[in-house]
Image 1 (cartoon, rainbow over the protein chains, first blue to last red):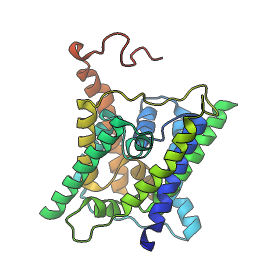
Image 2: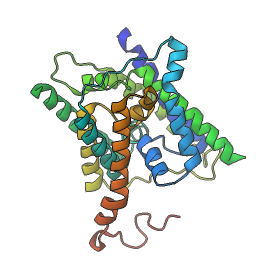
Image 3: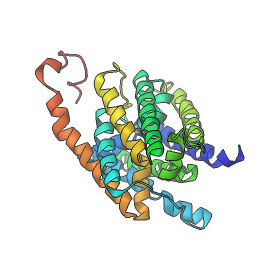
Length: 135
Length: 160
């Protein structure tokens, strides 16, 4: 259990972040919506501010814990390219991603977000599991 | 004054989000794939704790929000109104899920990981941006052919 405390606390911080944006600015903390909105030139300042804040995560983590956390990327570059394209098209077509549907949508008890989250979790599990079995 | 304050709030919210993502371990695609790969023999349930923590705290935020007539710094809430579970929602979410399972990146962690400067992260975010623009500029307009156009006064075409 103790191994999962950082995950739980980290998750709770995501909830604090989403609540702050909801209660003060009246907006959904959905990263694909914010990034997509910026790409389409909408609400440029607050969207850039949120994304710059996101970028500040690793440097802040380094300040707190002394070093940048390591990340491991196993996918090949062509796979990364395909993955990025699918995530881009899919999150815009489906109006949200893990944050907008998975966190805020579920907390708002949105039927659409429950359907979206169940769908992307099922497809994510299927895809990753198949790749794991084939490689 | 409020536009400036809203931008400051967005920055703070982003910082909290980024820090939470890193603390939770979800910026690391290997951890995400450790959850998604259920047959690996070494399944990592971390993502469930992240999601559980995030949703339960946001639920409190939503309970407070429902008692407010307006957000603190805006005239109105800008929230999706719900609507039907349609093909676009399901197809889009399915495509996103496949992309997520291929490399273990979703939009938040990938953008946050840009600050590591790693080439695969930059490639992912660039491809994601292209995918979003392709959807918004080409796919969405093509899907909006006359038979599917919402009847007048329905879906939000009249909004702003």
